[in-house]
Image (cartoon, rainbow, N blue to C red; front, side, top):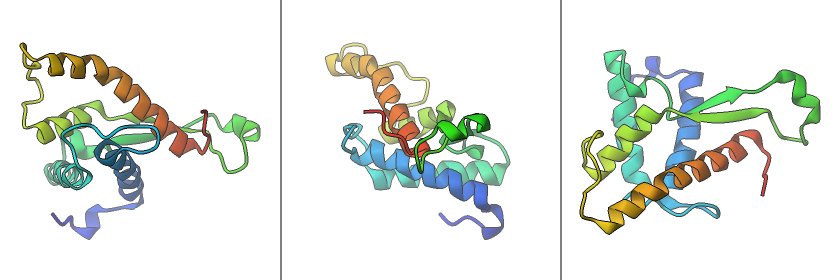
Amino acid sequence: LALKLATIDAAWLQGAAMDLVAIAIIGSGNDYMPVLRGTTTPALWRAYLTLRASSIVKGKGVGMLPLVILEEGDKDRSGDLHLGATDRSVAFNYPMLKKLLATMTKRPPGAPPESNSKVREKDVRNALPYLDALHWNLDMYASGRCAD
């Protein structure tokens, strides 16, 4: 899916770069996080580009903002930071994440988990810790500080 070059600016590219990091972690795992079962990085990236492009073409939708939103921190704290670190943090575009993962699982975004599946119950219980760990990981990459 090709986007018109006129619609791509520096902010879009910066957002897409951090989104690719998140998608690579979800789809392939890393030293801190396992792969999210049922996903692959290429399939997630294709679904991501489709969501972003359709939102941009329509001028509305969950893909108007990046999946991972970089937030600048307090500029007055810059003297407290380690060499090479920044005071940036991240936030998720949860509606887009929900739609992206629903696309990967072929389930409607509002569908409840399958009621008679023990695996699904475990997945639901593990969702919040997984998102917390993903958030911690992306914060570390955005700020340049490793807290482990």
